[in-house]
Image (cartoon, rainbow, N blue to C red; front, side):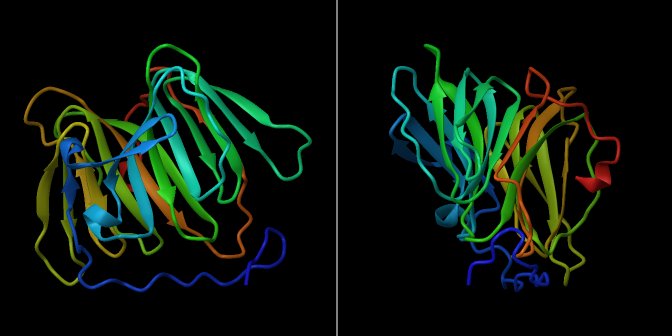
Length: 257
């Protein structure tokens, strides 16, 4: 049964806990990603079914090469966060007579819901590069990103979610992640290299931090795919511009990340 916006609300029921929580890699380096071709370039899949064993979402780096024509497509919910390059995004919404067109530049994030027709077009002679998170569940799921900066030795606190899977995508600087099974008192730390990503499934305590191995800042994107109530009303399109360099200050309420 498909519950459309405004047609009711089904009580939230969390996904079942998977045992073991990790059935694949915890950290995927960029060079270990799975490269797939698309009509405008390539997609480096980092967190995906093939690397983590989690079939519910994909997180990777999508490259749009110059000079290639964009073709409209519809599909799963996805968040597109531009790292470099320029272009244009178009979407065709159900109740509007014409398409929405948005210029793309570094720091721009587009969140588009399942089944919405859309396209991305590179408008320059340089590659357009974006971090993309895709939710493969066929009901409202909010894939989105939070870019942030951790100073040396800084990070957030251990926390756990029952309604989302997440990725810790490090763009530059030293990054590290902690995790602990809720039935264990052992906390494990792992290093996430620049261009790589750490995987955080549901029902696992985790945190992100800068290990302080140098004076470099850790610039990272907190990627998440939140599984909502099946009767929730979600916008077809959500657009926001972060700083022009793609970065935002470190969050004051770090425990909320």
